[in-house]
Amino acid sequence: MSSLTPTRANTLSPPNTATNGTHITRADYQRWAHEDRNHSSATTTRAEREERRKFRLQEKERWRTHGTELRGQQKQQMTETAEQVQRSKEYNAGIGQNLRHRQESLRQMREAQQKKWADHGYELTQTYTIKAAQNNMRSLKAQNAGIVNSMHAKRADHETIVEAQRQQAQEERRERVEKIKSETTDAVTRAAKKAFVDDRWDMADNQRERSEAWRKQRKEQELQYLESALAINAATSLEPAKAARQRDKDERSEAALALRNKTKTMKEQAEKDAMNGASAKHTIHDTIHTLKFIPDEDVKRTTENPERLKPFFSFRTPSRRTAPHEVSI
Image 1 (cartoon, rainbow, N blue to C red):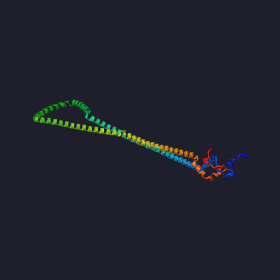
Image 2: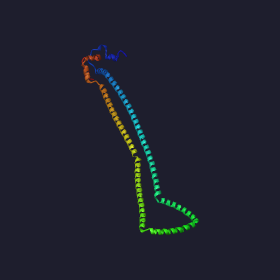
Image 3: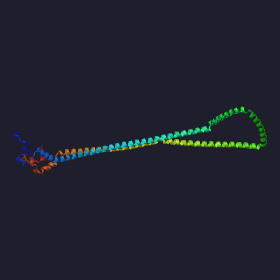
Image 4: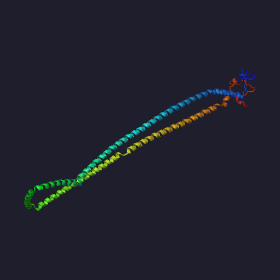
């Protein structure tokens, strides 16, 4: 640089004008004011920036920790839900297994009772129906046929003996008839007939009593069978399984509702934190923007102490004195 063009340092602070002069241009004042204000606010700005940086780090760490906690809670909730679902499945499987076992045992019991009653009914039919009489009749006919055949065989061998015996029997019958006529009266006949009729009535009464007892027994057994069938139907009902499924459904609904409420609360808290962060950012931005300008009160306070201006503006000393805030372009 040539000697005719002075440097900026020599222009702003020449050695021979460092402490004289009172008239200051607006450009010089503004240069000094900005330097002084920037120097004074630099420390504050750096401190605020450091605080904001620490705040951001703290917030970042807090949100990271919060996210870690939420992930852990989510994993724990999912694990607990899976365990609860597995327990419910095992519980329902146990109920189903018990019901199937119970149903199988009741079915076997019912089949055994049905077979027992079928056998008992068959025995009753064989004992107290026409088939038994028919069987007895056939047996008697077979016996009579054997007897007749044997008698025919014997009759050929004993015709003489039979004829003699017939004659003797005829004589004996004649004698017996005479004896019966002499011994038998009307009163004896009537008594015999009455005894015979009484015996028949007694036999009929006994038969009616036995039939009535059998009917009562059959009625009681039918009622017992109906009660047992109703108990079996009630035991094999699906109501316990339905109640277990409904209880499991209600528990899952309650867990899902609690999870939704918790998620909603966390979302509202996140929105609130986001709004607070945005408001803090706006406040910091407005503060930084405001700090860029020099208030008039600071300029007036600066001009109240002329000694402070000398190191900066002593090279410009016109004949009249003008305060920096009074300078106009």
